[in-house]
Structure formats: C-alpha cells, structure tokens
Amino acid sequence: MKQSFGLHHVTMLSSDPVETLRFYCEVLRLHLVKRTVNFDAPDIHHLYFGDRDGRPGTLLTFFPFTDAARGHAGGGAAAALSLAIPAEAMEDWILHLAEQGIDTFGPSQRFGEPVLRFEDPFGLALDLVGREGVAPGPHPVLAGATLASQAPDATEALLVRLMGYEPAGEEPGLRRLAAPGGGQTLDLARGGALPPVEPGAGTVHHLAFRVPDDASLGAIRAELLAWGLDPTPVLDRRYFRSVYVREPGGILFEFATDPPGFAIDEPADRLGTGLQLPPELEPQRAAIERRLAPLTPAG
Image: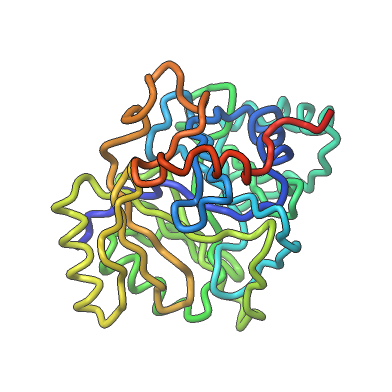
C-alpha cells in the first residue's frame, strides 16, 4: 500500500468540555475548527482543534464524556502525543506554561531533540518537541505519538511494510519510525509487556492516518483485509470518509481522506463558530442542543 501520508488527526477522551476548550485554545493556542457531535453518540460533543484552516495533519479531536472517570495509559493505545515547536521557541513555551500554572518535566533529550513533558487537565501526556524545520507560529503542531503496542514487532511491520513508515533511530526502550515525506514520527515503546490501557479521560481513543481520496481509502481497506485484519466498512464522517481497524498490537487506527474538509458546512473564515450536525441529525437539533453539556463556564 504505502499510501499513508502521516497523521490526519488524533482523537482523545476528556471529561469536561469547558476545560477541554479552555486548555487547548488558551494554553496551547490552537483554533477550535469544528464543533459537532459524536456521530455514534450524539449526546456528546466532538471538538476539533488545529490550525486556523483545520488542515489534515494539524488536528487534535476530543470526545468530552462528562461522566468519564480518569483513564490510565497502557498497552494497546498511544501513551503520549508529540507536539512540535521550533527548537528556539522552547524557552518561551517553558515560560508560557509556567505562567499558566502547568507543571513541566525537562527538557530532556530524545533522538537528539529537546522534549518537554506535561499533562493536560485530564492526565493526557503531552510532549513538546523542539524540532528542526518547524515553521514559527503561535501554537505547536501535531508531530506524532508514542505507541504502547501489545505486539510491537507486528505493529512495526504494519507501519513499515503496509503504510510506508521508515526506521529513523533507536534508543533504550524506544524505536522511532518516520512518516513518508518526513515531519511526523511515531515512537514504539519496546520496554516489555505493559498493563492494558484503562480507557477514560486523559487517554487516546485512536490515531487517524491521512489518505488522499476515496479510491486510496478503498485500496487501503482491501489491503487490510488481505493482511487478515478486520476493518470497518467505509464510514462517512462528513468532513472525511474513513475506515477503522484494530491493528495487531491492539491500537485503534483510522484511515481518513483529506477531502471534503471542514468548510463543507460553514464558511472557512467562520470555522468552529456554530454547532454543526450531519443532515440525518438535523431534525433532532433542538433535542440534541438541550442534552449537550454547555461549552461556557457556569454563571
């Protein structure tokens, strides 16, 4: 196959939509580019954050389940996200996070890059990486993830042989794979068996990988079947079409098309300003809006 173009988005679980919005917009300075609902559970928000245009490859998305207990990272999921900044901006970000009352650890060195570790309000591990070639900007960009696979050799085989990732280095307990074309990286934890992930707030739900179009998505699904995996049918997520599969190490992968993008239901210069629903849910708008948790602080 070897048609993957790196990460399209990463989706996490949180528990408080107001705090999710505050942290990712005010602390990490990302843009809210789409406010919609979980299409499979429309009583829950689905919030998309990214660059101002909501480009694939910049996106962090959240399901804020208000009754979610705190989860714990473990085998069968991504254990941390990597967010890249220019290396020379690290000191500014250390000061900014300190001003926001965020505890940080480091910077340490990983694969020759400075890495600052901190957590979001729900316990999700975030690694701020000083990376060469990252353009200066107001917010970090999605750079990759650390994967806690339950079968790292099989996960690596899928990423390399089927998805075009390339070996890019090894350190104690970690093996790095680089996305086709460079930029994003995935670090495979190789320190032995880990307890299974406990899903909940502060954990990663799935990683989505970019594919250019519907034809490529169909080809990917066929190849996943040929590998003996069990992908879903192609699903229409309105802003992209996608296929999900549980890879051999237990991590949920999604393959998502770049088109049609987020401007399909609101103007490009107004992304994220209104609650957007797919056409099949539009007749239920009033009831859905009553049930959704508010996105503004009480009082």
